[in-house]
Length: 262
Length: 305
Image (tube, rainbow over all chains, first blue to last red; front, side):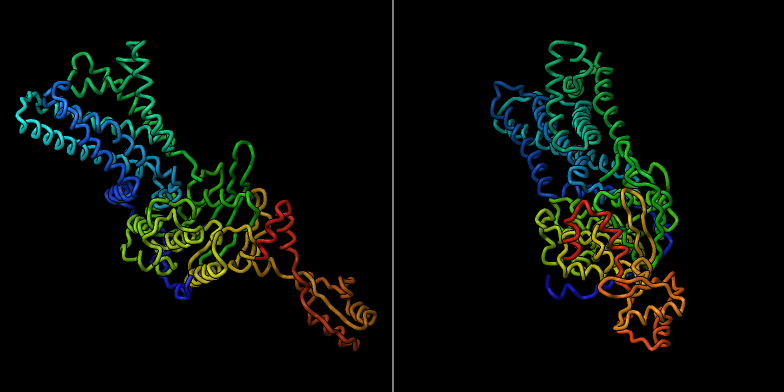
């Protein structure tokens, strides 16, 4: 420490002795701060870059192997959906868990003790990232289709507004599974492992039981949604939403509200 | 400004905090002293809403912490300097705090300068030493220009210069009307920083009050070349006395009913020469404290440092 830092610090004491004179923190401000926190570290930026590059990378598959992959608009969009469903939930998980893994909850909840507001801001940020990523996936799909069509390929224009909306919903729901898991588990590594292992486990179980495959395996359910196959599947999709999003998220909110921080 | 009443907390059947009542006034620094594991951190965490008391209440300026609309404008808290995001820079850490508090982010540069971290501002906190994190944590507590500071072991990791710097900062803060509550397991650290003291052991308050009163000596030490003459003089004046250590004579002050002046007068009346008349070395608080920390002898070394 240099001698210049040893000068007696001057600081003003807060204007009022009364605790109530400062207004609460507006939700907009919480969201903006949580947005910064979700994107201001090297790790977060690498992860977002990985989401973007994996989307572009997977888009090369239908372009480079025209005989193996459907040369349809929805076929191309499916690759964007696949890419975003892998890493985007991880972004959401980290947004929710890093306060616990990095122990910054001790700081954050001293800044805003109404923990549900902080979690709501984090969910808002995750959803915003999800929508932005879906738009990015749409752009990459459009670029991929343009590239394929420039090369003289015949593409089936089978995409309508409903399927575009389904794609957006698919990405958002995948983000929400990450949000729910992160809200519940609080440990980055454990939540990320769970987000990869559980779909595989339920996929395998689904081979032995149609009940599991139809009602509990969200990868299957969300794929019906993505492809607009609602007929007979509406309640099954809802079942997955309840089981994989609503229930763990509710439990996670309760846990976050009650957890003692040390 | 900080008030707790009968805060009690049980973890897994064992009482870690038991009926702790504190009162910290504006303009004072209260040292919360106790060995590691005595319940200091748990008490501070209950005050700021990180842990729920089984019963008892804690308020800051009359309000529960969790009810403060924008707490960092009222209370600066530093509960654990190592609980910072390792991937953020010092500047980013303070900028987030400033935005949450709703104060201009221009304050960040000023604070970095104040805590001597300007040169390290762009480095990741993961690369900071504990002392640097402690400084950053102290800067973070000051971001919202609070009236109250709650600091858990703030001297941890600071070098001797840094400790002196922090004492002056806290004294200045209190002199401007601020309220400070800080915990420490080092008696000498608290003695040099605080003006009020609360000693906690095994979750319960065992001593509290003004530092000067707690440290006040309860007896006088006298020395004379004529012990028998002095004994006679004291008996004549009706002052009880006992032989003290090292051929001295000890006189109990009995809450001020016996004063040094009375002793000097008694000796002077009988023409007895006094070569020493002073308050006895205060060992009471230290003995109390070290008896609490006896199981952890390492502390006495740290305390002496």
